[in-house]
Length: 442
Image 1: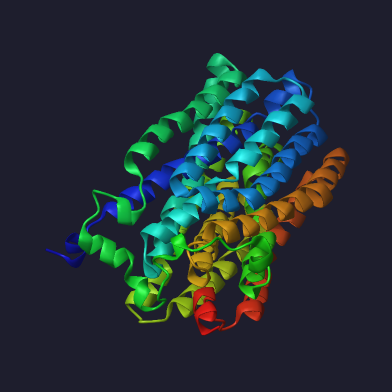
Image 2: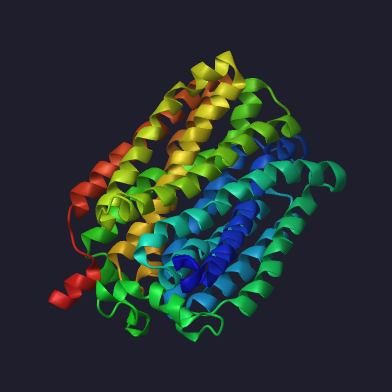
């Protein structure tokens, strides 16, 4: 019997639950990106209309993140995650009932507000169910749900639209969340209360107690206020890292279909395959990104902080080749797909680790709140990118017939953002201790 068999594996079932929630979360938000050309033809949308709807989603997502983390910390993971999923699924279905730009802004704003609960709740779940050395891998696995969602969407939405109409694309995808809720409430509970968890696995999950005394029980401590959390440089390191890199993923999510349509003159169904290929490659990056620091910790005996920092620097360098996406794509579209896919994979690897820095640095009673604060900064970055780059720049270059120039500028921004974020995060945190340890010293 191996060590893993002696310990037990139920925690990975919980990881599977949040993987499916994240998959559904991304299906619901990315459906609209594959309906842009449909709405241009049927509802007479312009690029500006689409950008306005996209920006509205991001604004309310940012607002939701600030409150969602606090809500999850206050209500607990089980109820908080359940409420968020119920509300975003409802908003997703409601999108089928509108047909004006303002109507879409209202329902997509509601979707953004509710969807904000996913990542704070997921990160808190990982902090509750995994010791530090496994958290990046667990985060990489559940975060790969964003890629699976982005793969399922292009392969399913065009089929639904052609056969039943665009309204059913929102109804069918929205119903998935209600199915997930059934399994969530049946299968989930915090480790110490879970009847299916063995004593050996519970001990393994709580093995960080030796390093940070009191961390296991800190879910019973009073929740930290935003004012207190914003006083820590660790909070700002995470927030600025998200501010600089989250907008890149937003850019991929909302504009890749348009990139392949406008650059290679592809129709909706034909666009599905290169977009799906990008996200398929990025799925590998998400899981490998969580595995690499675990390898450094287990095989090379590196401390968690060094393993995390080195891994993130590697991922930052792997994004750089995206600068040549248009040049390579001019030779063959699939060369461009490969370079963009590698950059997207590096982003997901980066994301798995930057999320895990929260549970590395903060006690469990603050993880959802800090994740929400950082996520809010990331969404604000996405809004700024849409307002000052995508919306105005894309409209201008499309009108002049040089849309490729807009994408070249954006890919250059994508390439450099991660290295810039890595340097700032190291300057802010350095070798700083975890917040729990600082509190104990005081």
